[in-house]
Image (cartoon, rainbow, N blue to C red; front, side):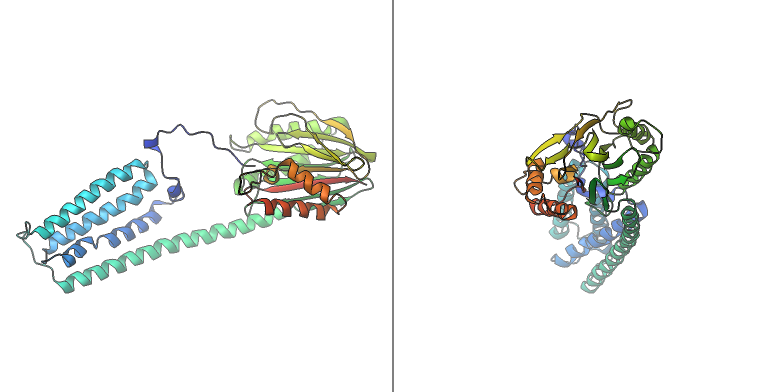
Length: 392
C-alpha cells in the first residue's frame, strides 16, 4: 500500500535537499572520510593559481589559498546534508567572490611582497599530485566502507526475502466446493502484502492483508499480523461471528506492534459448503464477484476502517451465495493503482477485462494473466497481491 504524503508546510527557506537524505543517517566517521577526500581534492586550487599565474607566489600564500578553498568545498556537502537548501546558494555566492578576489590579487602583483620562499614549478606539480593521491585514498576508503555496509544490508535483505517466502508462500488449495489460489509479488525484496488460507471447521478462511508502505518495516509487521490472525482463529466463537472477531482481534493487536502512521487494509472470505460465502473488508478495495451464468461483475464491500487506524472500531461481515463457476477476486491496490505512461490507473475495469478474457483458465493461469497485464500496463510501484476463489 502506498502512502501519500500530506502537503508540506515547511517554508521554502527551511527545506532540505531530498537527494542528500540518504547521507544524513551515515555515522560521522564515514562522512569524515568523504569530507577529507573533498578537502584534498579542492585544496589544489592554491597551487593551480600559482601554476597558471604570470609569476610564482610565496609558498605560505599558496598553502593558505588551498586550505581556504578546500574548507569551502567541504562546506558544500556539509550544508547539503545538514542544513536547508538556501544556505548553499549564500555560501556559493560568497565563495565565488572570495576565490575570485584571491586569484585577482595573486596575479595583480600587489601581494608580491609577501615574505616567504617562492614556489617553483616542480614544487607546484609535486604538491598537486600529492593532494590528488590523498583525495583518491580517502574517496576509496569512503566507497569501501559504504560498499561493505551495502553488502551487509543486501545479505540481510536476502535473508528477510527468504523468511518472507516462508511466511507468504503461494496459496493453492482445492476442496470439495472451492478452488483457492493466492500469490503476492513484492515491489522490493521484502513486501508488506500477505495472502493466506486457514482451514477451519467454521468454514475455511482466505484473506489478504496490505500493510501500509513496503520494504522491511512493512514485511515485519506483515509477519506479526499473520501470526496474530492464526492465533485469533483458535478462539471458539459462533461461525457467523468468526470474521468480525478476527478483524477485531487484529485491530486490537496492531497498535502495540506498529508505528503510529502504519495500518493494514484487510479483506477476508469465509467459505461455507454449497457456495455460501461471508466476506469482510476493512479499508481494502472491494471483493470482485464474477457470475458465470450472466457474465457480469459486482463489487462486494463493507465500508469499514483499516486495521490499527482508529481505536475502538467495530467490524461486521456480509453474506452472499455464489454459483458453480463463479469467481471471487481480491486484488490489492498495487494491482489496481498501477499507472501507465499517461498516468491512468489499471483500476477495476482492467481487472474485469482480464477475468472476462481468461474466465475458464485455471486459477494459476488467470492470476498470471492478470499480473502480466498489470506489468504491461505500467511499472510496478507497490506490492501486488491476488486471491482468487472459484466455486466448483
